Amino acid sequence: MGKSTDDVQPQLHHVSTANDDRAPSFDKNDGAQVRELQGNAHFYETVSAAPLDPWSKTSIKLYLILLVAALNATASGFDGSIFSSINAMPQYQQYFHHTSLGSATGIIFMIYTIGNMVGSLFTGPICDHFGRRMGMMVGSVLIMVGAIVQTAAKSDAYLLGGRFVLGFGVAIGTSSAPTYALELAPPQWRARVVGYYNTFFYTGAILATGVAYAAVKAPGEKAFRLPLALQLIPPLFIFTGALFIPESPRWLTMWGKKDKAAEILAKYHGGGDMNHPMVQLELREFEAGIELQKSSSVFNYWGLVNSHNARWRFTMMAFMSVFAQLSGNSVLTYYLPSMYGLLGVKTPERKLLLTFANTIVSGAGAVAGSALNDSVGRRTKLWVGSIVLAGLFGGVTGFSSYFEGGRTDVSSTITNGGIAFIFLFGCAYSFIYTPLTATYCAEVLSTPMRAKGMGIHVILSNCANLYNTYVTAVALEAIDFRYYFVFVGLNIIYSAVWFFLGVETRGRTLEEMEEVFNAKFPPRAALQKAVMVKKSDGHLADVSAVTGADVERAQYK
Image (cartoon, rainbow, N blue to C red; front, top):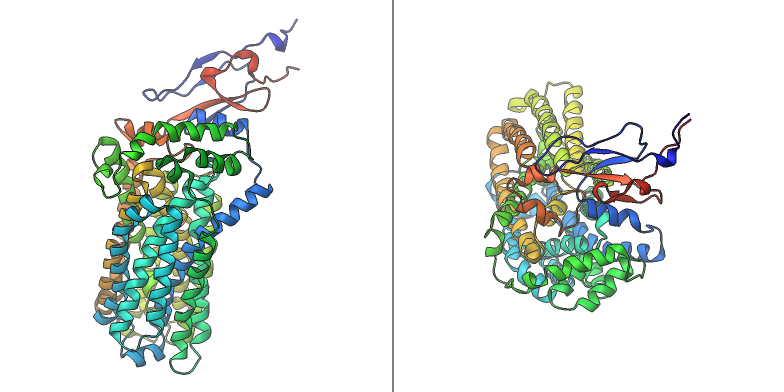
């Protein structure tokens, strides 16, 4: 006679630990629903115990709040893309006596990056002392000032000044906004929310390239001044919206305003319930780190590198900051029309149309990448993606080689093949890096050093962009397509670095990353999996804390 299912108890043979890689196993007859999940067991217990409704009225209000932050990415996308298109306009070239490549053009692009770097130095003090909202407001005002000067420019001096102030403002805004979004988003939605924040870069880029394509047919100065004037629109919405949104609960906790922080967490993370498990988890973690937060001076950056934990965090942030900019995408961002020229595309109208279309395709890749941010590990996406990028840029290089020496007797099939590989590269890059660049940097930085670290992230990104904006203009003019081999090789190196040294951040709250970075070798510690059992009430629980009676068992026939 068969044994009753009520008498069957799951027998745990082994549970993996940080020092043991063997897989856990249960008796084959227990029927328990066991899952291995990347990350922290307590995190998964909390999330499954009281999931949030993504379509509630409060959740929709949260999306609108985060939209204000996302408009900073829109502003960055517009400002970062518009000059690439304007640089291809004959009206602009004739008015300012510039060419599409060369040293003078490189300086025009480079000054924006220098403004970004200088602005980054002020990001930490502004965001930490005055708040994340104030950082977005200050950035939006500076962007508007720079846009006005740039639009009205009559000489290179005004053009350079306007672009410097514009870059200064963008640095402050784009450091404040992802930090704000990361700290306000519920932990279980964090990767997707901040990933979608990054995709808003392409709303600005699509608007910029679309307007530039439409304006190229306009006579005289209007062709380039109208697109430049539209840079005023996103920061105006940012400044207005920032007046009405709540402050980051982490920043409030850092300055001792725990009651206000708890109120915001309860409203947006717990459906108004102060006792919601996620709210309580976050409050406990905030309070545990409050003394460390208070002890961090607004102008003290030493905390970024003063311990084993901090150095690993800084290294991961630095890898992402530099690799994302020196993987080839910045060449597309600043000199895409010139790349089309190396593939035999001659007319400004076709160059701008292709640039516009490429931006749409890249935007689609970014949306897809953001949607998968919570289901695909950061490390996996980065090391595999780097191999893909190397192959695609190699394809662009191969097709461009047919046009060496300005050859014109080349089949249009070769031109179209090269254009296709540029589109594929842009889409793949956006899928891999766009949803992760700001997200990953903010995830690996500790709470008291996050704003300062994001400022350093912008500085490092722009150090790489100094190379991209100036050297690329000179190199493409001097050695044309051969310059692409640099990025093919770099992407291969990045793949190896991410595979062996990348630290996974999926499946943990920001505070729970502390235990990972305290480990002797964080990349290994980050890959440890939590063994979860689905209980009879449908909730997930850490297997080490579950009794046999709690486990949902299969029925025997």
